[in-house]
Image 1 (spheres, rainbow over the protein chains, first blue to last red):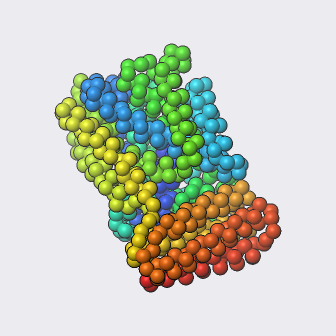
Image 2: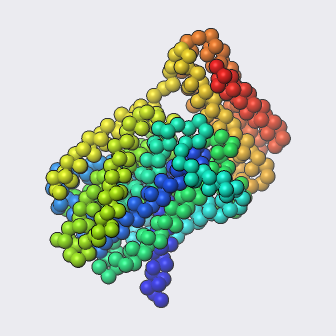
Image 3: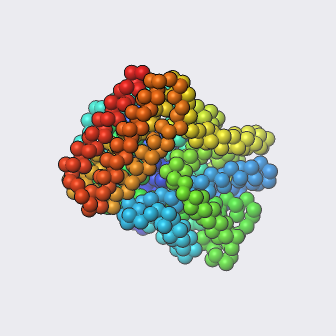
Length: 409
Length: 156
């Protein structure tokens, strides 16, 4: 019974923890401009993140070591250093977007200017990182993030023309005045949002934090294979709400305040309160994860003592890295940059850096020296190779498309 | 395999270092001349129309008791920023012919009207003068004016 509860909690946390500011903004923007014609990208992204997250979880559980420790050992200091620089920069950008997202969500509940909320949000993230146990932190934010299921409920209450939505989802082409370059630019943004690299670093380091062993591989697989797809369904529900409410009115989503309007239209003030709680939880949880990922990657590369299972005094440089990452993110936000723009840029930059994260994981997961008998099977490798091609193509196409479309304008 | 990994890391890093260039390209100002100037005019008008439609939806939801004042106020303020952006885009366009100059002037007038309409809606949301009907009528007018300009841009 206890084990069953553990699995249920893990799955629910994975669903609630799947969405972050990148998913919220990108899906709403895409839904308002392209309807559901890019929903297939979410499916491709979710299958990809399931594949590589369970792989990195297995590597951590079997070897007892997190991804970045092994990357450095396998690639050598110079190549791993290049990998670290790119991953760390993307992580900081994502962290900036998440802290900005918390502030924007709190503005919706208070009317207080987000720039006043940003330092408060960063301080709250640091306090939780400093004081709260890993499992409590992960479970509370994950479970509260589940309230974003209100998007799916809202979609049903809006009473959409399901045939029209199905037609949009099966028409893999830009609609109306949208162009093919914009279509592919947002396809890459959605893919980057679904396969954000920090999720993998967090997942593998979290496995070490929770002291997984080879016996836990099954549970980790269930968490990923059930939890993430449900998270993907919520992503599509956000896009569908935008497609139903904004697309016919020619409203283009450019702010977080617009994203909650379909929920208010469907469910009134109560649903509105629930969705704001969900957004705060999702962005707060993701801010914790990205802060931790910053600490994990640098500490694992440098060989420092790391982990929340250690007291802060025993992992001082790990905690200092997270504090510096938060301060850098906060400094960027205090320049008055629009957090939604930061989010849009961060998901595309994530897509550019995807090969750096996923290629090494695939190599390590095939290395019997680390994995023993738990190396990838043929089917997993075949699928992973297909994904590597997609990832490299997305990474290579991102910059030309960014230039051609004026960053999706 | 190690060598492939090292080379991939270097290539990906090189690509990553080009990324800011792409980002900067996205920040380029709409400063076009000649007949090509109608494209940024059309884009700015579309942005403004989107902002007005958002304001219409927001005030309608508030009037029906489905939205809190706080969220409505924040949404309208965000839309005012969008309208400011549209105005900025229109002001930096340098039309090259008389037709484009006239279109830009019409667009600026319509966007300015829309700004005033959304600002008035915000006053009503915050408990100032106005009624749901007057706010809706003003926003409808703004939307119609923008729609006319958009049609004219498309026809040009």
